[in-house]
Image (cartoon, rainbow, N blue to C red; front, side, top):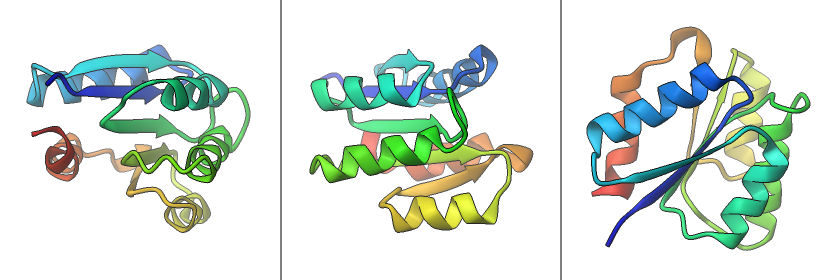
Length: 122
């Protein structure tokens, strides 16, 4: 069974980084990409994803947290990781709203990402 991952970020370079990490560690995984939190919610609720990696500030500040809340309120418990440029409040809220983890763009560690997501993609 093919596993599907979706990544969300308004910057193409970051979308590429997330996709490259996933594809590099899990070559059989299919990766979709979106640019906005609203597109992320729509795709996750319509699709069959094994994992989500989302930036927090996309079309608006906090779009990732809003998307996380909408996805969780729908009853969807897909593993979801939030990425943001370093706010302890964002990290705290991400975990409070049901994210599986948080990554700071300032010290983004691809090895840590692979370690965290392996359980969902093997």
